[in-house]
Amino acid sequence: MRLPLSRLLLTAACLSALSASPAAAELIQRDGARVGIKARLAAPQALPRTGGAPARLELALRIGAAPGVEVPRLRGIELHLSDTLRLRPSDFPRCRRSQIQPSTSARALAVCGDALVGEGRFAAQVLLPDQAPFPSGGRVLVFNGAYRGRPALLAHVFGTRPAPNTFTLPFLIGRGSGASSGAVLRARLPASSTATGFVRWLRISIGANGPRGAPNGYLRARCPAAPSLRSALYPLVGARLEFAGQGPMNGTLMRGCAVASASSPDRAERFWER
Image 1: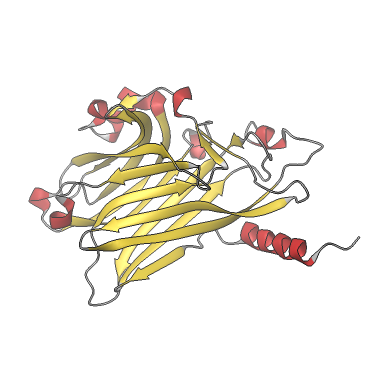
Image 2: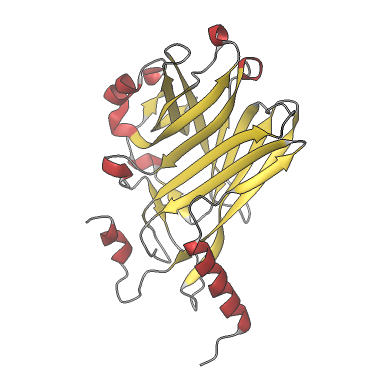
């Protein structure tokens, strides 16, 4: 049986996306500023068409500039997740920002460890150490929580340079509209950061904790392949970044997925139970 050319092209694109290096990134450039965005779904080898399987979303952001150009100061982050990803904040304990700010990583875990849903690393260039609104780098712990009465992911950062310091960045959880009906994560950095330093890179995973970042069920994923296809290419994450003194930068990361075998619809679930 011959497959239509359109189906062959789609299958080839999906296979290419599935085999692409996890380090592949979307590079956005504007007025000499350069932003690299990476996203990867660490999930079962195959995903169900409906419902979802426990998965881990890995996100990375790196900010730089061409020689002679000032690195832009990040003011806001907005992440539009595919509607194939489902967050489950109501199924997990909640942590309040006041419980972990200020605190060390160890103290934050002691207080809100049962609400831990992810982790990562953070780095910044601090220009005035005695007025730094955040540390120059450190570990990130991501807690399921609330901020000003709204569901949120609380990204807690603790570092020891230039001096022991901590800050907690709330990512408010919202919902897109129309064709983009997936979850939307929005965060605003302290206004003072535009004068005292700038973020160089941020790397976090959502939907993981425990040994080697094992998925915990906070994030579930499915593959949006058409009924006649076994794979799909889709926009995993859309990013909108706001910077002080210039317009926003936007990027979309396309990724591929494969559908779990029809003869074993729970294969993706069992993958993580080993």
